[in-house]
Image 1 (cartoon, one colour):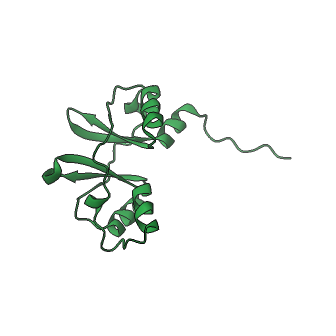
Image 2 (cartoon, one colour):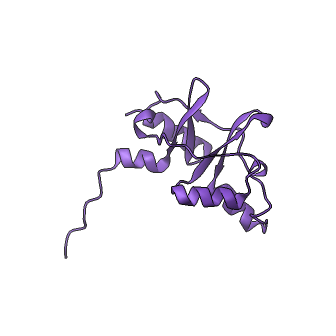
Length: 131
């Protein structure tokens, strides 16, 4: 199975000037764990994850004043839609992260998460047997 079969094609994007609270509210409303940060002034595409927001709040920073650009990962590992899920899982395990931005011809076309991969690999939920 390929990344294009598992990825979400609805991508939440935020700008570098969004506050962490704004980004968190958007991520919560969309029920996603990451947002693509588009910052043409800083050279392109980054990613902001729930962990980035959690780390900031844990440090006592104010989510109403902290901007996404200060917490965005810019050395992003990108996946191609034609990668296998094994390749994506290997990249995530090696890098210690849970989301990959999927690029096609240098444009973001999706995000694949560990959860997406697990959904493809694991059978659908089956009710527990009655005792």
